Image (cartoon, rainbow, N blue to C red):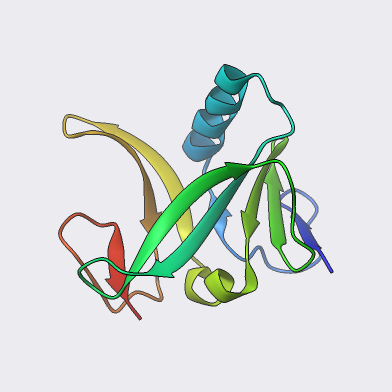
Amino acid sequence: MNQIVESKEMEMPTPLIFTDNAVKKVKALIEEEGQPELKLRVFVSGGGCSGFQYGFTFEETTNEDDTQVTKDSVTLLIDPMSLQYLLGAEIDYQDSVQGSQFVIKNPNAQTTCGCGSSFSA
């Protein structure tokens, strides 16, 4: 069963925060692909120097048990296993002198590695 959360009309707390900068970047990437039905999946998998690592991928389909967060017509998909590690996290997109990247600020992470792409919970 899909769980859909609209950021503007919340019936329950939003499971994670999808910043305006992240939404803007995802919209631009979807437009580049020319496939408006694409959704951004964020996930947590085992690996990295701290035990878990974040991942992003575009998908056209939604799994039955995915949680969906929609903001400004951009949909973020999170599977149930990843959701438990991402609950309350903020997904942002930052441009800096070191480069441009999606950044996850995760209150569930006990430690993070120097590159910021892996964590322990």
